[in-house]
Image (cartoon, rainbow, N blue to C red; front, side, top):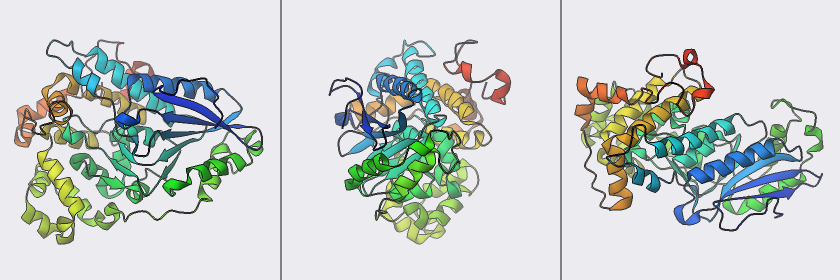
Amino acid sequence: MTAAIEGISDAPVLFSTEPTDCGHLIGIMTLNMPKSLNALSVEMCQLLSQQLEQWQGDEQVVALLLKGAGDKAFCAGGDIRRLYDSMSATAPMPNPYATDFFGHEYRLYRQMHFYTKPLILWGDGIIMGGGMGLMSGCSHRLVTERTRFAMPEVTIGLFPDASGSWFLQRMPAKAGLFLGLTGAMCNGNDAMLANLAEYAVASSHYDAVIQSLKQSDWQVAANSTDKCDNNSAHSIVSRALAAQPVAELPTSKLAQHWCAIQQLMNRGGLGDIDALLQSDEALIELDADFAADSWTQRAIATYRHGCPVTAALTYALYHKVTDLSLEQVLYLETNVAVHCAANPDFKEGVRALLIDKDRTPNWSRTLADCLSAEGQDYIQQHFTNPYAKGEHPLDDWLSAAALGNEAVR
């Protein structure tokens, strides 16, 4: 691999290029924090954003590939340890570090979604939280037999952020709502079904993928700016990836249980869904095979042990964002995330999982509390803009009129 940018091997993100046979370049971006499963930090988001901007203006660079260092994970989420440290009782509202953290992260996702050159994800290993946001922002997503993805924020008292409100909404049969509530761990086949991936390749075929991209005829893309054009860079990448042997992936649990998931998520309101999720007998009556599956049982156990405020926020967001644009969703997620950084459950969830590691969080409210009139007021407060006029980190994206309703503003 030819280094295009002089970097340090222990830098949090590495950048390099591969020369194509016809004289162009494939940009390679590697998340380089394998000990933390490549968890995203503010610095990593800044580095990625800066490099995307630089390569956007470089006519030699025709496509970019994003991957993670090591063989365990692409990206297991955000680096929330420093965020935890900033969530003190005396921290101002809005928390400056939370603003910095979520602001840079969400700006990166927007940049990726609107990027004009192909962005290819090598989605091998664990993908969670912030990694899912990166996955969603890529135009061409490859998964392998080792891919495992989840939105497990219910375990730490946050909510499925990182544009999760956007991509969970776009999964079939309300599978996204189920994944958001339960943090269920899914595989590469599930990603294909859930509109999060397009190509299945073996984890051993990375070099073959790069070789196929290098051997493609990029000359024909020079005069094509329409992604739908048969000679566009996006079409060239699609042909190169489609030419790879299709890997055999684990059976999709979402496909196997879609009917039970769809019935469960359409049971009524969140209280009705909770009543089913809390009852083994009711789940057996709904679908005995679904209830007996160890995958389902792990997901249900996560929900039962998870944060009720997260469940209420997940449910509310899922229905609130139906008609919102990506930018509106990210704006709204910023509001919710900054409120979570000021409220007790997020800090308590991180403490129990990552700091003391006792896995016994003391959540501030039960679901019954959240569903009460007072609790609903508390949940709705998370959606309000906590910033003074003109100080929201994403204000420059949207006019007030574009935000749609008072709850988003």
